[in-house]
Image 1 (cartoon, one colour):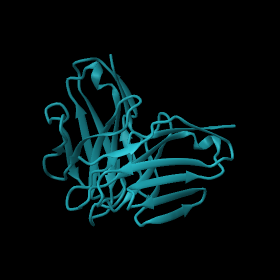
Image 2 (cartoon, rainbow over the protein chains, first blue to last red):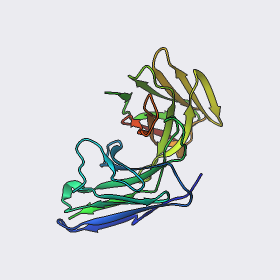
Image 3 (cartoon, rainbow over the protein chains, first blue to last red):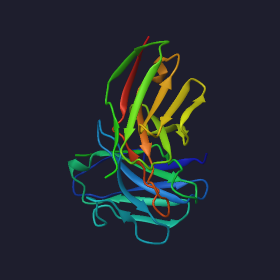
Image 4 (tube, each protein chain N blue to C red):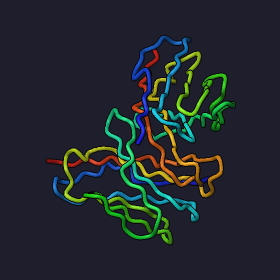
Length: 117
Length: 114
């Protein structure tokens, strides 16, 4: 399978600031997703990153807080804006390779561990 | 609302035993099922996919699917301390199109004791 690289791997940020997380895949993928995983919890989907158009956000997540870009089939960014301690979490990029019906698994990057002071 | 349910555990087994992890799902039409392993502080890693009723074996891992009863299980034979992790069950949408979202269970924490 392809290599999925996320940067940064971890960061400690001040409240009120913003951080952009990058996800780079070494081959073209059909779908890219962004998840959040809070301590001791399962994965929560933030949005689907759409190539060349606005991301599709899940209930409870908005573009102003989590702007997402996907300029091509191998790269996406997630920005966590105006951060507060509640945003402390692991943020994960995942990809899906298949262009067929949605019966293919997703593969995850190593994640970004974000702490807000 | 599609749901995927797992016992949160922790499930504790001795080294060498069989660990049995279970998952039930609410969408009767689901066609694909995935098991992920997540070590503490790491990201989820796909370990098994199963699409048809019955058993699928891969090394020490066996996935079992029963669509009539709407459950999927993961058996780990000869459990090793290195198998200690959280195991996540995931189910994709019934129809594909442009929506490939997975619904994840909350995960079962497995501890294998030496």
